[in-house]
Length: 282
Image (cartoon, rainbow, N blue to C red; front, side, top):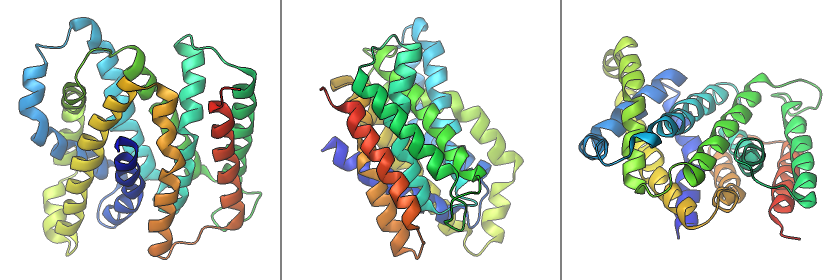
């Protein structure tokens, strides 16, 4: 049930970000989501400050940046130039990034089949990066690279949750992550004068409503559920929701009139196949 819920929440987030970008820039999308999240979670965060041991705070800060700052901004930045469905397809590389980062920084073992999966996944990533906005192979797509970088931050966050934030309640982690990033989000919210932008734009209130939906579902509910899922399973299994997220993102993208080429679908298929190999036990 957690995987199904997370799949729908995060698979739908890409199309919602696309609609929010009609009014806001990527920085404002991050700022608005952060501002709303801390408004909802502030009482819990203030109480959790004294409940979480001091030794966990460096990891909480890294987790907050890797979850509530970098991916939110980078995915939105990618969507300023590429389709939301394509960003959803690129998100499928998250399990491989989780595996690679676990090996490099968290002393995880790596089996031969996982090595094959990683190599195959990297081939799929390069393939997607070399497919230009017109769907033809040969042009490096810079904005697709931003989405790949976002998955690196996601991979760090998943491993930190499993190995460094053990024993902390999911709601506490979510609230404290929102509090850590709140000064940056609120600061940019005020600096960019989002209130005036909302009032001056005919679609401003609708876009702000979308940010509210993103904050309450992706930033809060999604993070609580992901934390719980990781605590009762393992990082790679928890990131398997990315098998289904591309399907949901693709569905919304096609429904919205987006065009995804055959080459892009084939490359995404290679990535998903590589994730399957990397997670096989033998």
